[in-house]
Length: 83
Image 1 (spheres, rainbow, N blue to C red):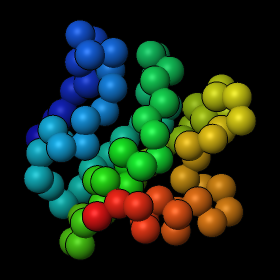
Image 2: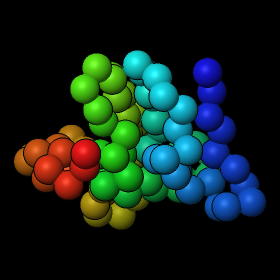
Image 3: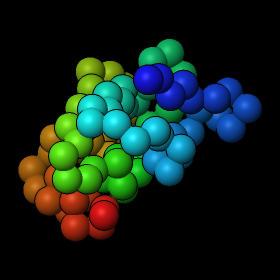
């Protein structure tokens, strides 16, 4: 199953629109649009039994990398604000 980000809403991720699945793969920021999904939106995708993979290969293109999930302690912060 695929969920494509739509240009008419600025390629913004709506976590509630992601279909129920066991595996979710997100590019953050997206390529080629460079849209950066907030860490809180990514955390909202977590749930028991689901594997969430976030590809941050282009994160160095974002000044400050403020929504990177790999920064120290960031994942715990996101997880506590998610579901």
